[in-house]
Image 1 (spheres, rainbow, N blue to C red):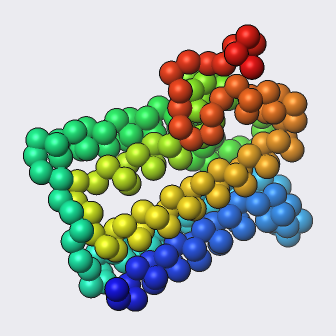
Image 2 (image 1 turned 30 degrees about the vertical axis):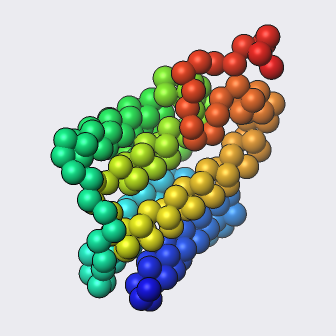
Length: 204
């Protein structure tokens, strides 16, 4: 095995470390101290832009480095994987809309004053079936590729670890913010693998 998969895993690890650090409550608090009110308005938008731009070179690595093909899913089965990827993209878009698309992207906060409303825990729609539908959709999309290579496998493994660890860190923040409400939601709803029914009081 060449060094290429390890370089890809290292790139994902560095990206994940920087991304998680900037998303932390500590980083947000420091920005408020240094910049003041504008930090509250522009943080989300700037964070999303940086996360997107910095992810591009990581995603490009599998194509730029020497690679080996592992398998190809033949048609008509490949059409099923592509259909699954399309459903994952739709689920991703629906999940963003259900959390408030403009707020999620940071476009709602940037033009005006910071919102004084307390945030609300979203538990409807896709969030009724799984606590992190955006991460679930992302995992489905990356693993349903009809052509798998050594570099792509390394990227997918790295992204899977990153998303799972990211979900765990996000849950810590949600527990601080929502307390008992989130504890109950976590008992009722799986983290990443959705189920078709909700737990009832009798099933607990």
